[in-house]
Image (tube, rainbow, N blue to C red; front, side):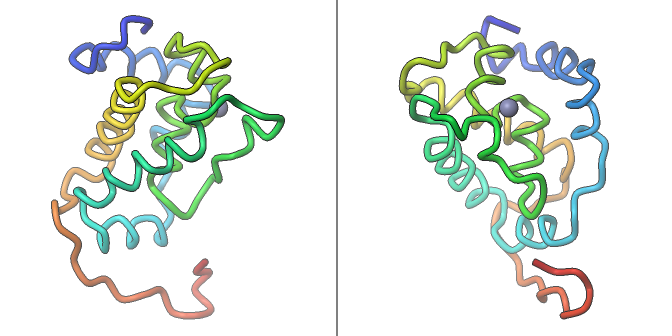
Length: 144
Ligand SMILES: [Zn+2]
């Protein structure tokens, strides 16, 4: 796990799935809001957004909020972050051997984004490169 080669990511993914809590994130249903959002954006924009979210939420040195900055639904990127241990700096340190006490490098952000996208490719293999129109969920259908 500690080599950080995207080519070797199958092994990393297999290891991640052995952790009980994380295992769940590989198999649970993706909520409809998150699925719609991903389809509306398309893979290209989702990748750009994933990079942004990672930079904003885990790019800097962690504060007291670390471990709670990644929501549990509403965006497939969040599911991917929990599944690939890119949700907070504690997980990034534990699973990817990147120390907590500094800003992430571009290489590291690129690597972690690649993990997130690999998860999304596995969970939504038919996600189009470009976004498509998807009607919003009607009120009363537990949107948000
Ligand atoms: Zn975490």
